[in-house]
Image 1 (cartoon, rainbow, N blue to C red):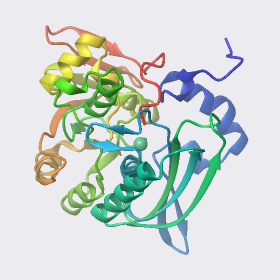
Image 2: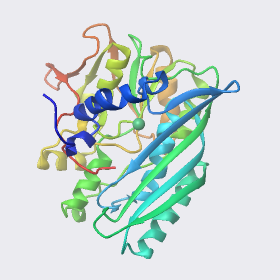
Image 3: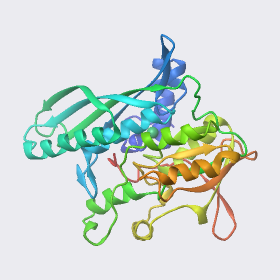
Image 4: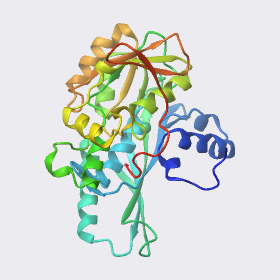
Length: 336
Ligand code: MG
């Protein structure tokens, strides 16, 4: 059953997005770097390995608890460049604005982008601005692309999960999605939920300094931890088992998820990573992540298993097992 037109669900990062990419985009561009479907393309130039990634930000509202579209656009691309183990260096920024957009807001957004870049230790070195007439876009959309260098010995990607690997999440899940939704629903006044948007490049370089057994890194953004684990299970053709009682979710986030009918496993994160690491290095990598200012609540949530290759299972609180599929249906449009 083929869709005739693009639906919001095609932007969810879940099943429909994946189908659109494999049906239309991959065949037309057809190259192995793209087909690897990792957070960034990794390639060599003159014997030097580079990581290159891009992302567009259309979040609504543009100001939300704990952040705004600008810093999100910087942190998000830094993280995608870094998930292959790269050290991100330079970013480009493309901005599309709607006629009438207040300069006051633009200045806040641009300033926060500069601060985010500084915090991550990268530079924004090229860019573009366009203005469209009123109604042709909603306030402001931002694209960022980034480039970084990768140690030639590293091979971290979604195909590398191995049976026995432990799966670490670097902190509480679903914070970003619920912070944005709370704001949208006018419920942000009585919660402490803020976005987790953060640059993870230093966390990654610290863990790679002490371990050469990190196999996969990925940031569970759109589609959440549930969808991201499915992507990795598929790419690696391995089974994944996670434990409900180990999933770190803040009480306030859990409460609002229950109230509004969301499963935290499918809600977007913007400052978290999933790390697949060989069991013998798990403790020291976990300790290293917890030393990062963005990794204090890191914990092990599951492991890679022999059974059910390509699938993700959750062991529930009462000891049953259920399949965790990719996200289907757009539950939170314009979340990033
Ligand atoms: Mg990503």
